[in-house]
Length: 307
Length: 187
Image (cartoon, rainbow over all chains, first blue to last red; front, side, top):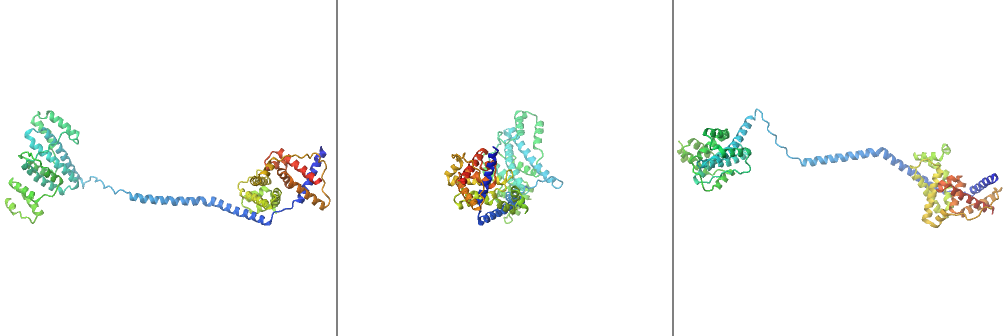
């Protein structure tokens, strides 16, 4: 057994030596160079790649991100400027300088609201003898609500114009028997307070003594607006003792609502009426304004009528 | 000079780190045996050169993934074996079958005579020539086992690793290859 193993190893050695003696083939030099060149170039490229990956990849990607983010921010800024809403006007904070104006405005608004409420109550309370007053009140409400809207736009300038329109419209309506618009109790925009007052008045107000009626009415009619006092007095004076008009006067009411410029004829008619009612002070004032507005028109005859 | 004493694995790791000279040393060590490996398996020299070049390119490209778990020569010849198998599968399916299913049909039990190296160089060359012819006629799997054994002094285990077969199979292939070569020389 040992001899077999020894002879086998001996045979292996002989075969190996014979094999090595016959194995003389070698690769061509060109092939060697090609492979070595490839190994060199591959290593350089992989080395460059690893250098790029380790040393430059992160900073380069960060720089690219920064550029992108900056670009996006600039874009967003530009678009936001395009979509920018115009600035909201600053709210007026009450202080010493503007306290008076605010108080006046508040008083005017409050008086208008109070006037609306009281007129509504009046409309419900009045019997036939007070229909004229009710009509005047509701008409006044319409004008005043317009006035209220207009005040927001032209607070100072239009006040006198509205006053004049009232003075013109009311007598003319009275003359033409214009029907009175009565405010319907089912109007949707009436507030709860006025409804409550309506119910109260309709149920038992008429039966109350006069003193109580006055007490109830007075707070509602109280505190007229600063500029409204004279206006109301003139309007009420004009409306007093005027018969209730029956025919429609939509055109005139509309003209009043639209606040169109006062026609010359109407203005002169109004001045004549004031003279007829012997309200010379107001007539003179209106005449003076008329002269200023229309200096070319001769109004000497009217001027002569005013003492 | 130092590189000559470095192991194959160290040289490969050095090349992995970018040292070109380490690869050149490694190449010189294995270029001839690898070249002959393909030359013995392919009748066409040009084809064997292409395969040889392909193996080195594969080695260079896989340098990053190399880990010295096994011997470098095992690693290198495993690449060579796979390249050869691929080549057979593509070009010569018949020979591939032969490579995979080679059977020992010849009875070599009567080869009890011991071999002896010839004393004169001429006889040695003649014997060597006979051996090479016999090797060329061997089935591919036996040829491969014999070449890996005689060229690289690979053990049965290493041959099994390279050829990706069981050690017993590799041992059997190698034994039959030796007996055939021995018979060829004795004749």
